Length: 254
Figure 1 (cartoon, rainbow, N blue to C red):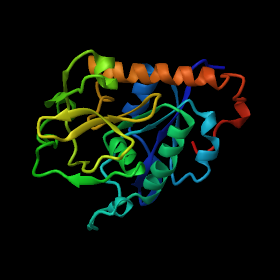
Figure 2 (cartoon, helix red, strand yellow; figure 1 turned 180 degrees about the vertical axis):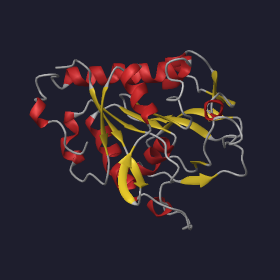
Figure 3 (cartoon, rainbow, N blue to C red; figure 1 turned 30 degrees about the horizontal axis):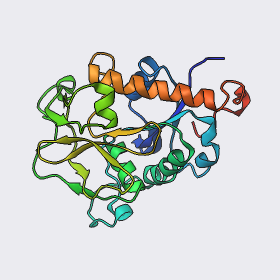
Figure 4 (tube, rainbow, N blue to C red; figure 1 turned 90 degrees about the horizontal axis):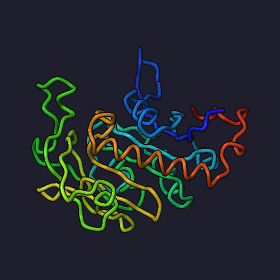
């Protein structure tokens, strides 16, 4: 049996040939496997029973997606845009439960917004193209650093990275509006946009940028995924890995 910790990677709804699928971008799984050193189980749909088996996982990851959190989830103004109710339900159920259980959490882009909403915060649309990617550029270039963020002294990210300011990419049109009471701000852009937040006493970190794209070569991205992997391995040890997880029990919701 592999000594790798097992993490749940949240999927989103994707129609393929008019047939519903749940999917994640491969780059997330690759970063978790190669940099975090984790085994990955993709979980999708509302997964109402996932909370009941969270102790089988050593971490949970919510990555980005083009579809926004439904404004109805945080009392926002309705708008004619596609929604993914299953992904919303998955995030709102699993993220608070993982925090209560002390299971490491990593959120990326939409994952930061989901964490904020799950804990009682709200979101806002950003004006113009201030934080959007340049779609005229090749995809790899879109994920290169676009602006700097300041890391508050004493924060989790400041301690992890060792810098007061770092450069990050920017590919989003929404951001935190009212931050959830239990979240701590970990990074802020020059225009005041909250770019990262943490919660709890263990590893619960969510960032607005995309560290997965250059996880193996960008020092900031590498540090985030490596530290999540460390936290997942510690969680596995606390839960008695590997004897706690017989092979026959693995596979549900993946």
